[in-house]
Length: 356
Image (cartoon, rainbow, N blue to C red):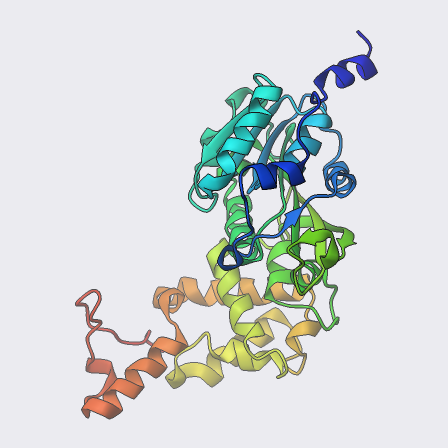
C-alpha cells in the first residue's frame, strides 16, 4: 500500500459535523472555563499542519472539547491520540470519535495540569535529549484561563526534562490569546517583551505561526488567537535551576518601566541591598540603567549566574522574598514587635533575613 493510500485509510468515516454534535449533546461553551469552540475544520487542519508530519505519530491533545481539532489530528495520520478533557460533557462526543477510529484514540477524563503525561506513552518512543525530537506532539486549542499556567508548568518540565519531556524534546503546537502569543515570541526591546518572553525563549525555539480572528470561534471571544509552535533547545541558554531563573526574571520585570537594577535590588534584604545589587551588576557586566525589556537573554544569563554565585556564598538568599520582608515589617508596626522576632505562623520557625 502506498503512503497516500495508507493515509487515506486512516481518515475518519463520515460523521456528524462538530456543530451537529454540539446540538446533539446540548453543549455550550462555559464562560467561567473560558471555552471557545473552533468549528471550521479548515482552520483546525491548518493548526495541525504547524505541528509537522503526524503520520504514525503519538499525539496528546489538550482540552479537545467537541473534537474539531481531534478530527484534524486523526485525519493527519496520527496512530495514537491521547486526549485529556476535564469537562465530562464532552466525553460522549469524544467516544464517538474513538469508535470511528478504532485503536487510535485514548480518552482521559482529567485535568491536564495534574495529569502525569510521563506515563501516557510507551517508553520505546523516547529519544535522547541531544537527538532529534521524538515522534510525539502536544497540540491544543487552550482555554485562556489555563494557557499561561500550563505553559509555565511545561517550561519547568523542559528545564528538568520531566513530564512530557521525559521522552525527549517533545514539540508543542498551542493556541493562546493573541497578547500572550505576542509575549511568548517578543524580541528584545519590543513593547511586548516580558517575563514570559524570557522564560520561554531561553528554553525553546519559538515560532509564531498565524493568527485566528476571534470571529472564527463560538462564542466569539473579545480577542484574536495566536498559534505558537515550540521546540525545546538541546541546550538551554541559561544553565541555572529553573526556579532561580524564574525568580531573577520575575524580580527584574516587576518594575518593567524602571531601570533593571530596581528589580535586582529586591533579590536582597534591605540591610545589604545596595552592596549586593552593585556586586551583581558589576559581576554580570550589565548596564544598571537598561530597562527590563532591553535586556538580552545573555544579559539575563549573566545576572542569573551572578545571583547564583552570591547564593552559594549565602544560601539563605535563595529563600529570601522581599514581599515577605515587607509583610513582616507591616506586622511589626501593627504589633509593636521587631520584625526579626516575628514567627512564621505556617512553619513555627523564627523568620529572619539572610546575613549580610
